[in-house]
Amino acid sequence: MRLEGKNALVTGGSGGLGSAICAELAAEGATVAVHYHRNEALAREFVAALTAEGRRAELVSADVASAEGAEALVKEVVQGLGGIDILVNNHGITLGGVNLEDTEVGDWDHMMDVNLNSVFYLCRAAVPALRARGAGSIVNISSNIVNSLPGGSSAYAASKAGLVALSQVLSKEVARDGIRVNALSPGLIAAGMGQGAMDRRDPEVLARFVATIPIGRPGTAEEIARVVAFLSSDEASYLTGQNLTVNGGDRTESYQ
Picture 1 (cartoon, helix red, strand yellow):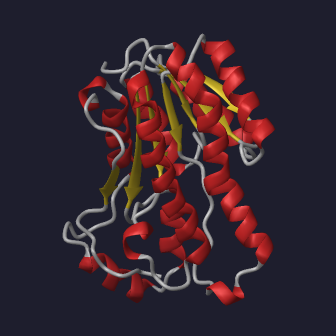
Picture 2 (picture 1 turned 180 degrees about the vertical axis):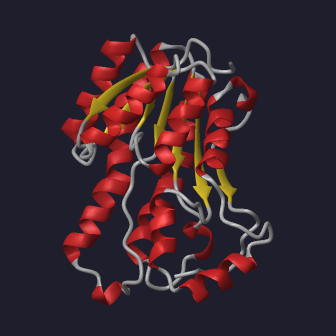
């Protein structure tokens, strides 16, 4: 129970990866605010399942791609739970296989709004609340794509690389307040957007890519969730400003 007495806000908390993160943080003793934006039925079902297991979880909703929505979300969680100790920015969208010259301006702007601008809004709103608790942890979910930067990924890669830079700069600004900020870059994960990407790939192409992963398989959402729980706990008390890549040793260009 490394997180007993802690309050956590997890954005995109009812999705494939987010639900595993929420479940792990709750299992470690945290009270978790599970954020969703569109799929209310799925989110309510997930929170009901968590509470039925005796976990502490609350459902919250907001469009975090707007500054107003992000600020209102943080305010709601602070008022409802009495404060925030952990912020996990897990929400995101992807756009792969589109060269820069073929990327629509609207698609680029939407990618930045959802994947990067929203994290700026949330961190800006949450830092005072974390500071008020005397310590805290922010974990921003990036992507292994920042290590390979394949062609056809300009919008997504730029948004996720920006997320790593934001995390590292912010970590220096708030370290003296006892707030740690880290990015986490998953590789191929059989959940959420990762599973969707695998489902869209030609099976032979996917098999060739998986064969290049030294561990020899995609990761699981639970494996990522355990790393998030570690980063959120006092066991990681001297770990900040890092981009922790969790990818089974993958160093290939891309499976796109």
